[in-house]
Length: 203
Length: 203
DNA sequence: GTCTATAGCCAGATAGAC
DNA sequence: GTCTATCTGGCTATAGAC
Image 1: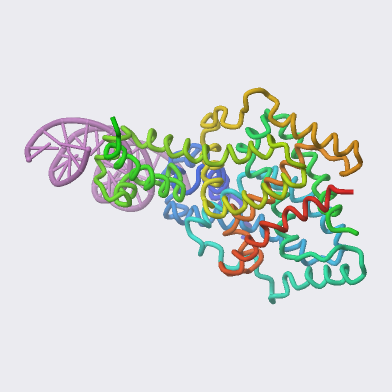
Image 2: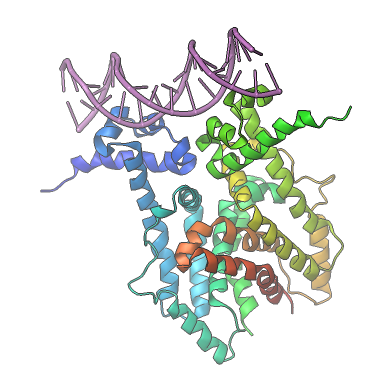
């Protein structure tokens, strides 16, 4: 009843596939490289996952399942807006920094095939951002924050959190920084992004 | 002496190659597709550019030359900081929106090979951001803006401008918008990003 | 379940006629 | 300069032994 040994090879393959697909993309990835990284034979990949496409799908789904819930959560907690912003930027920047290839991987493959994402971000109803909208409207009424379009605010926060990591190879060059120094800037952002956002909206 | 006809085929190939490489990336692009799009034979690509690699390099350089100067300029004008921010976000968002595949293309290929970018962003001296730093320090002294790390500010502005366009396929899903509605949000950002940034830093 | 060997295809590159 | 035909290598996928 206890399946331990059986999942093992499959798990090892998935880990290796994640690594290769996320660095090289679907088109650039080679089944041989995945096999080598997993320390097994190329034929085994097909034994477990039938085709490159199927293996890719498995990796893609796992990436989505890692990213999506964390973003949806920011919209659905009952914390004060400022705490939401602080928590999200801090945790999300740290998370994306550890898995820096995931967002780019998802964006690239969505460009190839927009249908890959069915409804990863759909919550039960369409109340997903209704909650955020209401919350912001209330704070505007109370005079705690300036009037702002909630969707734009969400775009601001996500952009400030993800892009410096995704665009690192480009931004490193613009700022003329080496890896260590750039990494320090990212670390700093875990707190300074929230400050920046809150400064902008609070009255 | 006047070379007109000779450049023609080369130009046509370059345009087609830009299109295909920027959508599919180096690995996903097919010489056959480029030839088809250019309306010529596959052998001609090799006649003019020798190899896929060389053709790719030409496209990559042209993309860099389109992006880099515009970013460097924000740092090197003598306008007031607030005007810099307004001008940059407005013009850059509009520009990137017209060429939405360029930033992603550059980031992806830099990930594959960090050496592709030699010194596209180097100005004559290392005074490139020194100017921005001085300008911000002065405004802090005068009490016009809060103290802020100039490099973080630059990261903020670039992220807010580029990511909503680059990450469109992902963000469209998070916000559950169709193409038209999302495009309207982008258009709005041409002005609201500058507001957001300035609100945050001015006292 | 795991391996070796190989089928079969496709893409980049070249040869050579015009 | 432009084309058709073809070589060559590399990649996915499978057949079949153990």
